[in-house]
Image (tube, protein in one colour):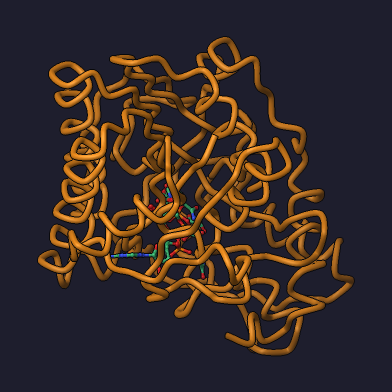
Length: 327
Ligand SMILES: NC(=O)c1ccc[n+]([C@@H]2O[C@H](COP(=O)([O-])OP(=O)(O)OC[C@H]3O[C@@H](n4cnc5c(N)ncnc54)[C@H](O)[C@@H]3O)[C@@H](O)[C@H]2O)c1
Ligand SMILES: O=c1ccn([C@@H]2O[C@H](COP(=O)(O)OP(=O)(O)O[C@H]3O[C@H](CO)[C@H](O)[C@H](O)[C@H]3O)[C@@H](O)[C@H]2O)c(=O)[nH]1
């Protein structure tokens, strides 16, 4: 299939491009390079444009000859979504609606969408399955839930085939060592801890140790980015017209902030000073996926299950590219 990967120059999108090509598909990238990197994608398949400009989208769908879309493009900083919600509703929700309109116009009915465990808010229990209530606690999560709802309605009314994939915490880098995670600003735990190991930060601040977890720090489910992307390809290949898949993507294993820092110490051999800080507003104590629905629906399972392996994969990229991409 020819696939337009929207947000394909970003962290997860660029890994999806590799996964698509490794599975024999033809991937094209649409990105405004707000967070994305030229160096992360093949130059001859990059179409620069903005989701907020419908003419850019129409041109990209024509140029790529796309039969399907993977939609990764979004703003994803929880804190910024609280202080500047207008930016998030506009870019994420209006941008997604523009994309859906452009797809309808061209008769393209397959879409795989990046949703998030943030749509569950503070779950009633963990692990989380897809039947649990979606009650986001910040505008970022609200925008993702709004898009899921639009996809639901469009699927029902217009026959769109949708996979809304609710990722837990993406981490790691491509096995080739050629692409990895490079966000500016970086807010995610594993890259921040590895920046300490590289001597770029003095310490990592642990956001609270008074949570109701065994060591008091938050527990998350860190899924390797290549595992995430193989699930995307599996979902795309199974989509049928009018179908709406909603699937959690995680490993089912939770690791605390302290456990992640210990794993980073083990992998890097660096002492990695950590200081205790305040809770970060909006952080649920534990977010761990029950992904059995994805296992059954997609015939998929994550290959990386230990947090050390995930950290080692991220470390290879950060060590080789301490300053990230050149462009
Ligand atoms: N990283 C995670 O752990 C995680 C977890 C759950 C969900 N997600 C979701 O997965 C997706 C990808 O995350 P990521 O970490 O790769 O983010 P990223 O910022 O690295 O990638 C997003 C890409 O979209 C592009 N983009 C943003 N707005 C655009 C616009 N208006 N027009 C064109 N391009 C635009 C950016 O330039 C960037 O390249 C996001 O939708 C995010 O919400 C990420
Ligand atoms: O310097 C840091 C950074 C993070 N953390 C903690 O580490 C854990 C992981 O934090 P991340 O910022 O790496 O990721 P989140 O769990 O906040 O991920 C959330 O934000 C992502 C968007 O970037 C995704 O949407 C994801 O689904 C959503 O849960 C959290 O407990 C956080 O408090 C620290 O203690 N110190």
